[in-house]
Length: 271
Image (cartoon, rainbow, N blue to C red):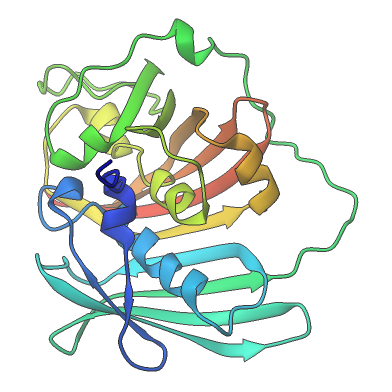
C-alpha cells in the first residue's frame, strides 16, 4: 500500500536540523494569508523549534511571538536557544530568519509541571454542541481551508458598509481539517484563528496585521492527548482600539470544558 500523505499541518511545521540551535523550514502554500503565511503557522513553526531542541526541559507554559516582517515564500531558518535553564523552568529566545534578516522574534517558557491544586475561573460558556452548529462556508485566503470553523456568534460581516457592532465577541467551534490529534504546535496555531476584531466593530476593510501574540498554555501533553481530534471552543473579544492599534483576549476550551489556552493579541490597522 502507498504511504499515507502527511497532514498539511505536519508538512507546514516540518523542520530539518541545520546548525546548533538552528532548523531549516519552508513556507507552505496551504497556509497562505493575504501577505505571506498565516501568522498562526509561523508561530507554530517557532514553537516547534523549541519542541525539537535536544536541550528542552519540560513543556510550553507561555509563548510570545512578535511579527517583525512578512515571511517571504521559500526557505527560512528557525533559531531557538535556551537563554537560561533552572531546575524546573527554561527560558527561550527564538527567531525566524530569511537571508540573514530577522522576520519574527519570540520568547518562550517551558517548565516541568508539578502536581498542585488546579482550577480555572474562565469557565466555558453554555453553547450549542459542535454537531449542532452548521459549518461556516469557507471563503477568502487559503489558510482558512485548513480549519473546520463552526461560527455561532460574531462572524465577520457579510457586507462591508460600515454597519459595525458595539461588541466584537466571537464564539466558534474549530479544529484542524482534516482532523489531527492536538499538540502544542497545532494549539499555538489555533490560538491565532480569530479574525480581526475591528472588522466586527466597523465592518470596513482596512490594511491590518498582527504585531504580537502571547499564548498561555493551561494544558499539558496528557490533556492534549485526551482532547485528540475533538473540536475546540474558541472565544475572542476586543479590549481597546486606539490610534492605529487594537487588542483582543481569547480562550480555547476542549469539548469537556477544560481550559487549554488563554491568548492575547495586538494588531495594527491603517486608515
